[in-house]
Image (cartoon, rainbow, N blue to C red; front, side, top):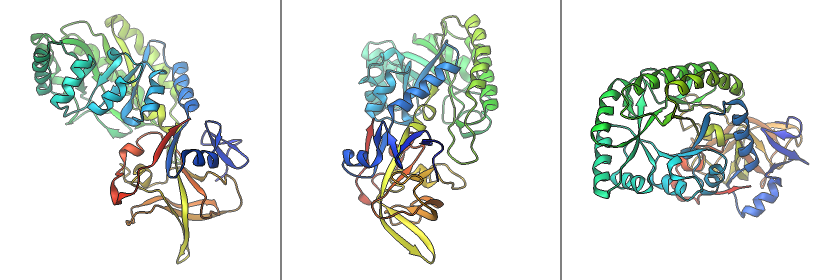
Length: 408
C-alpha cells in the first residue's frame, strides 16, 4: 500500500514514516514506552469539527457521544470543540463532569440505568434521556428523596427505521427508548410527576454512509418530533435528532456526502424554529467525530511461513481491537486499512496475514493484505481506530497487558 501524495488515510508521511501530531511513528513508539498503543491526533479531531461547522446550519449544536471513545484526555479536548456531551453510564458521566462542559449540556442515555447512576445524574443536574415508563417513575421518586427536580428528555423509539445503517437502533421492537405511539401518555406522566421536561431524543441508527438515507431519516425525525411536541407539558427546549453519520472502513466505502446532509438540515431548521422556537437542535455524533483521527499500533514479534502463507505475528490482537478482527458486528469479515507505519511505500509488496498473540484463529487483524516486506520490530498500523477500539475490546482475554493510549 502506498501513500496518496504526502499522506496515508489522512496522516502525513515523511521519509517513509507515518506522522501523528507531527511526531514520526518510530519516535512516538519510543515516547510511549511500549507497544501496542492507540494514538489520536488533535488536529484531525479539530478538522472534523470544523468540517461539520462548515457544512451544517449554524443552528445545529454538535454533541459528542463519548461511548465512541471515552479516553479522558480526548473527551476533555472534545469538550472544548463541541456544544455538548452524551454519556451512557455512570463511569462516562464522571469523565464528562471532569471536563469544562457545563452540566446542562450533558445528557445521559441508555437502557438499564441503575438507581446509583440516576442519583449521580440528579446530583449533577444533567439531562436524563428516559428510556421507559419504569425509569421515569424511578427518577421521579429519587428526585423527591434527594430534593431535586429531575431534568428529563424522552428517548423515542420511532415508528420508522433508518435505511442503510450499519446498526439499527430505532423502529420495530427495541430495547432503546419509548415507542413513539406511547409517548403522549408518558408525557402526561411527566406533567403529573412535575418533572423538568427538556424535550426529545430520537436516534435511529449508526454507521450510515448514505446521505440520502440520513436525509430521509432526519425528515421523518423532525415530523415525528413536531407531532409529539403537541402533547408536551412544556415548551421543547432540546431536540436531539441523533446522528448516524458513518466513516469509510473498506475499499468500496465512499465518504458521506456531508454537504448534502447540511443542505437537507438547512431546509428542516426553519420548520423546527417556527414550531419549537425555544428548542436547541442537536446532532449527536461519536464515530464520525473521532474514528478517523485514531491509529492502533502494534509491533511485529515474529515472521513465519506456513505452507506458503506469510504470517506477521504481532504483540497486538483482537483483545485490544476487536472491531478490526471482524468480531464486532461484521457479517462478512473485511480488513480495516493497514500499513507498515515505519516503511510506508518501502519496497515491493508481499501478500501477508497480520495476526495477534492470542491462542485463537479469530485473532486476525488483516488477512491477505499487501505490505512491504516486514521484519521483526516493524510497526503495523491499523487505521480508522479512533472509535470503538480499546473500550469495545475484551482486554482481559488471556491476561495480556492493556495497550496504552496517547493523544497528540
